[in-house]
Amino acid sequence: MSVELTEPVELGTWIGRAQAFGFIANHCSVGQAQNLRRIREAAAYRLLNITWEDFCREHAGLSRPRVDELIRSLEEFGENYFRLAGIVRISADAYRQIEPRIHGEHLEIDGELVEIVPENAVRIRHAIIRLRADLRAARDLAERESMPAIADLHHRLDRCFHEMKALASSTLSETETAGYRGLVNFAQCSLQRLLKNLPE
Image 1 (tube, rainbow, N blue to C red):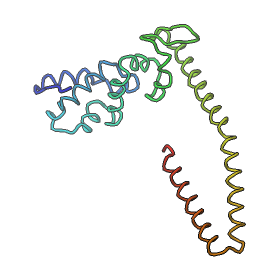
Image 2 (cartoon, helix red, strand yellow):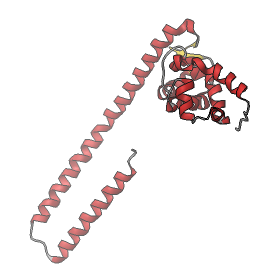
Image 3 (spheres, one colour):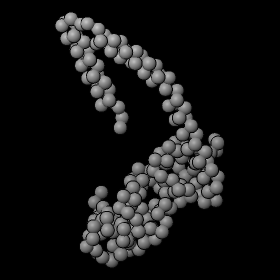
Image 4 (tube, one colour):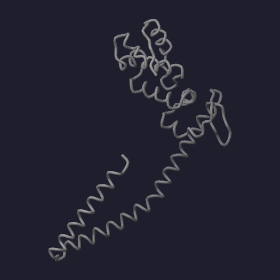
């Protein structure tokens, strides 16, 4: 979406609305994030003869990556992220983890929908800490359960490599040596393909 802005007065108004932003960086209101997004989209900071990075630092009181991150959160999550962030410090990654428990302006806690308002801050903070701990525990359990399969593969591979080493130490004919080299090359290429397919 393109936003046109040519008047310094209008830019000053937008800056004024976001001026306190740097003092409450982790409790930014949706309105402040919207103002910063408008300024970036309109490239209005150029009226001050500065870069977006300089504008973030000098007028928003934050680094460019932090401002860009908050704008991305606005675009991905909408108002609910900022409503929750106004109560408890929460990163975008943490918000993604608990997002299935958020319904409109409420957070599901023990089967109950609790309104995301400052009056419920203590209960919401405790619930998020517990939710994230439960998610970590579930992830750790899944990782542990996958380890026996990996350990079994490791044992079988170790046995194969031991047999291959023993074969290489024996007297091989020219044909057997060629076949052995082909086997080693095949194993090497297969392992390299597996490594390339692994997530970073």
